[in-house]
Amino acid sequence: MGLAIGLMLGIGALLVLLALTDDEPARPTSSRRHRLAESIAEAGLEGVSPRGVVLTSLGLSLLIGLSFYVLTETWPISVAFALIGAAVPTVLVRQRAHRRRAELRQVWPDVVDNLSSAVRAGMSLPDALAQLATRGPQPLRAPFARFADDYRMTGRFSESLDGLKDRLADPTGDQIVESLRISREVGGSDLGRLLRTLSAFLRDELRARSELETRQGWVVNAAKLAVAGPWILLALLSFRSTSIQAYQQPAGVAVLVVGAVVSVVAYRVMVAMGRLPEDERVLR
Image (cartoon, rainbow, N blue to C red; front, side):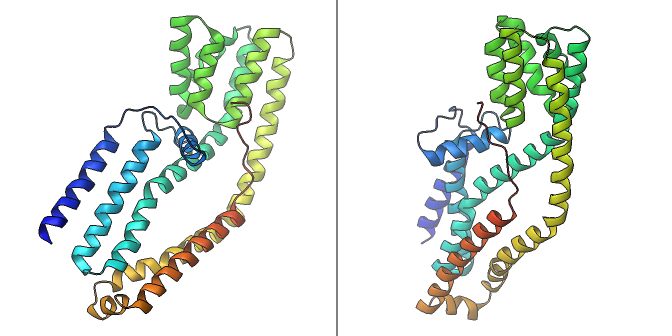
């Protein structure tokens, strides 16, 4: 038993190490992996690939399952928490992506206003974008600095815009980038008016969304706590011998399975009911 536990711990540590040192670029080969790659891009995690997230999930699942088995010597409880551990990295990536999108939603009006002012002042489009690396909102300075470096090295505006759009990974960023691309290619004097209209629209949307999120925030948090509460209680009860013996029986296993199914369904329903409409990246 000791040799098997040591071997499995070693495998788990190796999987985590491979995930941390994985430099393979994201190459989605399926719809699920494609969605994970999109979440990673929206979270702003450069250098992280779907394979790295999957390996981290496997390693964390193995380590948590083994830890609970060493402490409780009960495989149903160990498997239940191993499955929860496997979902943690993906959930964290998606939460980070959601927080980053909310953060960018707050600063996009300032970016558009800055661009509009630069265009009215007679700056070229590359210079107007490059100056955001120093004058733009802090969360977006790094992507615009990379754009400035790309354009300085290549002189190719369209290709530099493609790189900027990939690094921003945001629907509003896609709209702004494509508007600037069209203005650069076909010319015209309506870009300033377009940017001012877009800025007003973004501010109105931000105001309405903030009110809705404030009203429903406590409901969503209460629902999340309701889903997590039984599993936290199970983790505490698993250190009592009577509880361990109960979950080793077929009835205890059935309770865990039914509880897991109900928790997943309830969480999905809660997320669906509490989700506000999100813009999709149709101009990627």
